[in-house]
Length: 101
Image (tube, rainbow, N blue to C red; front, side):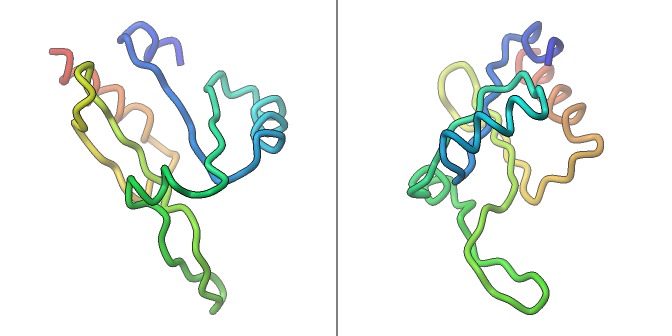
């Protein structure tokens, strides 16, 4: 997270979990990232990431893990959908560096 701070980025995580669950998760994993609760899914819907998913033959609504890079003027600069953890932070940091370029 230090690299993101040095690049001038504010990193936020948002999920439909309650504030209490977010706090426990943040403490357990010592993320160093501010987590925000979106229990009514309004933010997820606005960003188009509250979607129908399937797992073991069951269909349900859930979050499509995504990352949004927003420039200093508040404009959406880049979107990563269906994010996988491995290598993702580095890809975002590189895009951030290019954005600041």
